[in-house]
Each structure stands twice: as C-alpha cells, then as structure tokens.
Length: 417
Image (spheres, rainbow, N blue to C red):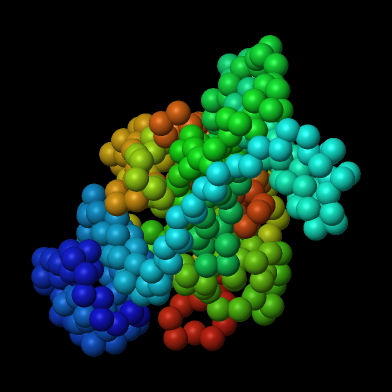
C-alpha cells in the first residue's frame, strides 16, 4: 500500500471505489471480513489517502461490491493511470543539463603540399602536419559513415520493410514490458557512387540525429501480463502431479505464479489471462489484431485437481475474448460484450484485455501474438508465460481436492448427486 498519493488520477480511482462501496450497502467491517484485510486499509483506499500497490485487492473489493463487467474494466484502467502518476511523482528529478560553450570555427590554413612541407619542416611542424593529415582522414571516414545509410537499405524485403518481432513474458510479479523492434521503411538500393573524398570532407557538417525510426527501435508499447486471473478463488483450479500431503495451501491470485512454478501446476479446464496494453510515447498505437497459437497438444494430464477456493457464490461476468483450445485452428471470439479489434492505446489511455482459454479433451500449450502499428512502423509482439507457453489441460475424471476455510489439509471433493 502506497501512502500520500495526492494526484488527480488517484482521486478518481478512490471515487470509483467509494461509489461501489456506497451502492453495495456493505459496511467497511463486512467488506474487511470478506476481503481478509483491515477496515482502516479500506477506508484509506476509498478516501484517496492510499493506493494499492497491485490491482488485485481493488478487483476483489469491486467484485464483492457486485461491480458490473464495464465497471471492472473502468476501475482497472483508473488504477493503471493512478499507479503511473505515483511512479512519476516518486521518480528523482534529473539535474539540469550543463550548456556547452559553442565551438568557434578557426579559419583553415591552406597547405597545398602537406607531405612536402612535412619533409623539410622542423620536427615540431612535421608533427603538426601529421596531425592535420590524420584529422582529414577522420573527417572523410565520418562522411562515409553518414552518407552510406542514406544510400543503401539493409535487410529489407520486397516491400522495403523489415520483418521484426519480440517476445513478452510474464515475470515473477505477473507483469512484463514489451520490447520489440519495429518495421521501418528503408531506402532502395541506389546506383549512385559515393562522392569523392575531397568533396565529402568539404560538405560534411555536424547535424542533429534524424527523428526517423530505426530498425532496432523498441516497440512503442508495454504489455502487463497476469497469467492466472481469478474471477473468484473458486474459479481457478490447478492440476498437480502430487498427492495432497505434498501440496501446500491454495494460493491467492497474486501468489499463483509462484505456487504454480513450485508444484509444476497446470491450469485445469480453463485459464484466464489479463493483458494490460499501454503506449510509451506521444504517438497513438493501433492494436490491429490478437491471435492465439497452439504450440503443442496432447492427451489430458492424469493428475489431481486442486481448487484455490470454495464457497464463493455466483460469478460476475467479465468482458473477454474466448478461446476453445479443442478446435483444430482456435480463434479469439468476443464474450460478455467485448468489442472486437482494432483498438487504440497511448501513454494516457491503456486497454485491458481478458483472454479465457478452455479445453475439455486435451493438454494444450499456447501463446498469443499482438499485431500493432504506429505511424510508419509496424510490428508483432509474442506474449507467453515467463518464456514458456501458457498451458491448460482438461481434467477428465480426475480426483479433486478442496481446502475449506478453517481447515489445515486438503479434503477430497464430493461430487454432487
């Protein structure tokens, strides 16, 4: 929990939370018991004096208050902006840059015969002549370096654009930054010869860096990843190849990535992934399409099914993209009022996407690719889970275990009927 927010974005986030709390009719005490937190913490979230360090506590608060899918999305966007404003306020202020004195050009001394002068001159003058010769060579070399990229394009395809891409993976905290190179237009090959050394040396003058994007420029966006989203704790099940006595208590959404890694767990039946996409510069970024890719498919895992919660009640629907992993060529379909692509994002206007993947008959490894464009640039970002594909398996006739509140052991699940 962060203290002393004091920004307009944080105040708007607090207003949304307070409105949900008021409409629910629930007291701070009741909410605190259901959320396993203190009443003072909830007070500070709702009056704007504190901002959660992660979005998960706010999402749980909103779900208990019966927020609609649209309100959940709006609350998430508001938290992203408030968190970014907090980061800007806490960033150290850079010291003012020192202004360099402008260089004064000295008149050039014309020496028509440098080599001859060096032969007959005394040692000191000969050394000066050699230095002048070396400087002339350096200027010519710099001219060649500056001129060459403007004449030749490297590694371009038939359309004059370079194929590029990058991978974005969920880190330990469930978030990551998209770092991708962009497609950039390159100049076609030219038959023009390089200018003569004397002409280049005379024409070259210092110039500011060109604003044209280079082929290795980073993608103008970031992607935050939550690989295991709990609509509520009961919605998340994991398959683990271990007996109940060897498996620790269930994990919260925040700890789910570590829990899954520790036990080699795989999402059971269904997996919901959240993507927070945000621009990094002044330009708008168009998100053109989101694709799902199957990297491997096999028989469902014969492991035990463990639920991360029991007795949660009804589930609140969420706008999302749905993926049937059992299809031969799965595609994303809209669900719960979700609008189809394209979308636009910027540094001040992020988007949050939920992708719900499910299977009833297979063990599937999969990832996502996001196509984007901005100005004359274009690229693709691959999204996965910590450098490996997401993995979801069916739980066909597998024994299930729950961990009821107040218990200290896993209890075998009793099937209804």
